[in-house]
Image 1 (tube, helix red, strand yellow):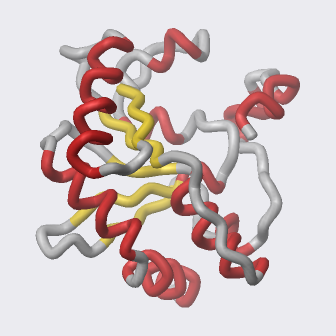
Image 2 (spheres, one colour):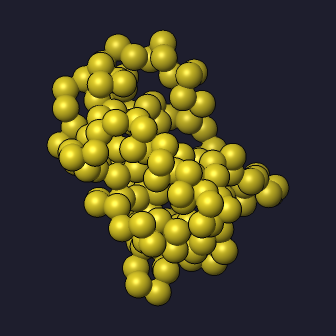
Length: 166
């Protein structure tokens, strides 16, 4: 519980997280959450004692009715225009094709197949723009600035692809 409270304190006080949540909520995507670099960079930057500016904000969602990359690009462009933030969108209903895997059934299912445990920590938002944080593999990866491969990525024989995701 202490690690969760530390994560909530870190993310809850970040203006960037609040802005990203507000922008994400404004477009009303189904089953959305922010994952990856934004969360990791804020946490690891604090641990390492330096400010790390995330290069993008990874927003994922699950919509089986809009599965073209072009749909993601349109939403991404709109989000960037209204917020000024560097969003990168990926509908997880189509990402199984990119990863040569069976269809994912949800955002949570897709997150279990992410390459790193720290990437599988998500933020969604509440009405007051406070972050709601959840993790597939626990919060420990936020407090140890070392990339750890997820069980699925390791067991699927894709360890050689690991460097592509960093």
